[in-house]
Image (cartoon, rainbow, N blue to C red; front, side, top):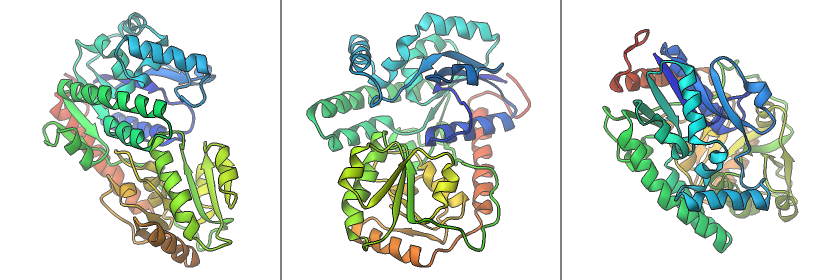
Length: 391
């Protein structure tokens, strides 16, 4: 069974962002299911030379982050999106033409089907793959995330852009779900929101983030009371961070040490001087383990929170909003659920005073087993054959 994994950004190096970790988990499960997978997409800007290999088609280099682009680049993306009635995120992919993608596809050789990994690449190039059966992986309900971002937008231009994305994404997601032989989501709620809540049409992928973890140490060396890490440039994640900083932190006692890693805007350090903004860190696991407790602060978005899965695999104590637990069937004993700011702050202090680490291996193995089962079920329902067979 030969499948093309069509994605916006191809894997390169150790997975760091939630999107990269999810992709690694899905690709691993497809491989264990006996599939030959050729990955097609763009390399992060400056990394094309590092990611090329026999089972990967790199269409060029791209930095998809809007906030880091120049004003001219943003205008170019917007013009493409408006001219083609396309989402802003898909228009970024049009640095390469559909004809180039078609030639690359033909050069791969015989292909049984395509896995559209999220909406961005599919929104730009799905016509190239129209004659091939496909599976759609919905990492999120993107139109809902865009609508939530529009509500949280801080200026009219952002609000307009997110509202436009939401409308186009709703139609695109409906089309992708309709055309797909099978749909994978990352949470049960997303199956219902995408209206594919039928075991013959869809399944939830319980993700894993790390390899099997070691037994917890009797005592960890900690530098902070609480540690957060994330891709804060993604609007739904930023909504959660802003909620934590503006609503929860004022209720924390003086001297409670909080560190935030990731691409948080530099301006936040001036607004919240009591928080240590450490930027990008060389080892995300080492950083997150340097805190006594992990705040899982999601307040928006869909799909699953990979940071929650990572935290549970590592066995670390946490305080989580209900949104941070979506797509996760088992809540560890050292995870406290709190949705109100004062309650969340009290739970953080309580957990930091008496941190309890657990052995996360059982959680990891249960997730991996369920992931492999869901992948095999989806391949079978899509008509791609059982493990070790081809159609």
